[in-house]
Length: 214
Image 1: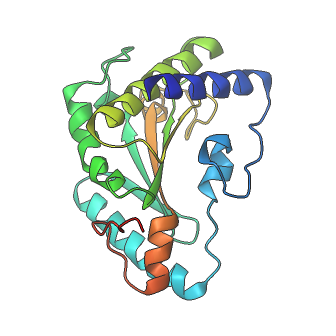
Image 2 (image 1 turned 45 degrees about the vertical axis):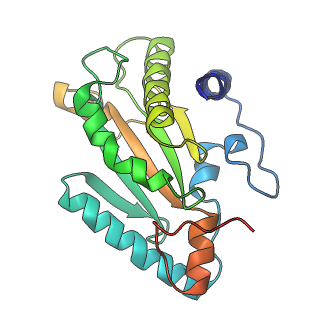
């Protein structure tokens, strides 16, 4: 799986530098062929009752993360959870080795991936603009790769997609120490996938219920 993550990130890095976008997804929305924006809006939930169940479940999950002192927001009509973790809580300065504090911060997300297809998790690593574009992109690539590998070693990465964005998407201007600190971050997107959609269709969502293969 480490080679897979490295290949994915290498392709994404080349596309970012060249200005190209990943190929459009096939009908089954292969998550590794989608751009970040495409992955955020896929799969689309068209049934209103199904959407209501998912929105209620995601809201409860977001509240639970908030109570655990995570920076949380909900997007896409309350269907997608976004948890933001400062890079300083994951890595030492200019380092790419996940530290013990970082492992503790990521641990609650391991159980999210124990039910295959319940969630799709996007790992989006950002930096400030200190250094060249190549340096910041490479830094975020190595950091998100380290996070991906940690999930590979401690859980499942079947529905985990890493993105390295370098300095390209700041949330504030990089004009102060504090602002640069805010821009150095990991965003974790928790997006409903086919297992959750199937449960919502039946009227009851349970992350711990793993459907038996027929």
